[in-house]
Length: 484
Image (cartoon, rainbow, N blue to C red; front, side, top):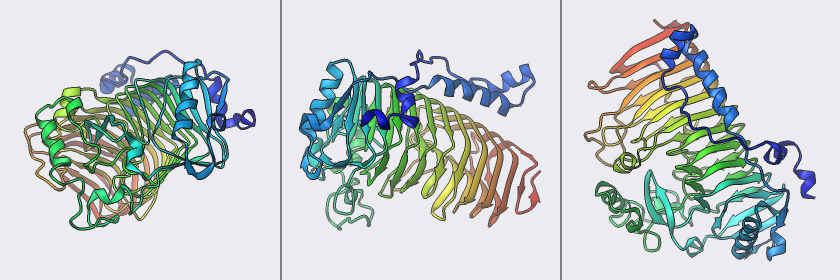
């Protein structure tokens, strides 16, 4: 049974040889390289992107299968299978690795913790339902919340310090978050929130965590969990190497969906994220290096893809930029942004490559977005976008904002820098309120922004640009106007 479904897409999980860790950062000086070899910055950039793609390969797993039903798994949708998952994963790991197989059926469980050399595979027709009981996500683990590390409820699927792990198949992970469970903690006046009940912005929740961040409180002392209202992540790998997430569907997430943190060599391939809750970002690599996100569909309640690198003091403490990230052949529907950098960006982001993507929804706010402020600081440099097809967005095709802030004062002493942003071969039907929207700082303007062969057929306003230098338009039209 398993061998039959392990052909086609899954085959490469078992057959692609594992490459050595790619340690050199790409594209550290694209302009210099371009001048030396006579090519354009985009040509050079995509050669470097190909190097990343060729390096980030799927891990291999032993050809041994551990069926969850052999460890007490019951597919009735009501029996908790937490111990069955735990035993199957531990046995697989202890015996040198392989595949933990979830056959067709509905399996209720608490938190699932993955280990090295284990591939968790969901057959077609398999659905993993995650318990609505918060106690099923204890004990607390080292995790994060909006770019700040803490001890909190376990993510629904979690791994720390593991190598060679996979989550693959054609089944569905259903977080079962809704207006009665997890989402009301957002406290935003919707998602089932009842006025007067505790929520994430109560003093003992986010304000307490923010203070701990400012004071550099050790992570192990930042304890939350029971008695607090900070929602768990859906899938998080922390300090992991060689990870594949392939083919599966994620829905009804409590918070961010796919969150690699401090990890390297990550392949997210053919995944569907269909989750419209609060802060339901699709995929958020943070402090990560060498990431490929491809062939995916994102239909989300927040950013489809958001590349991050820590919030405020935490980002400066960790000081690991997110870099060498390729997004290709993806489809974005609803979301606050298609591909976004920020707002948790204090350690910086560099070398981001986006190509052959489609974005189209009346509920998609922006296509490409960069957001930071002087509390976050950080930098964004080297963003290369080409062959993008946009049906419609609400606000802007490209938005750069260094005054980002909601709920609270976001002014500080850390001036962000943004430079070297390239868009090429971008076709847009409806660009929303602005074709291009840039709000830089007088002290640190956004620099070196190039739009080549960009056509925005309709926008309410052509551009709104403040504090930006060296904007170059090459064969670019907005509202039939040739931009100069």
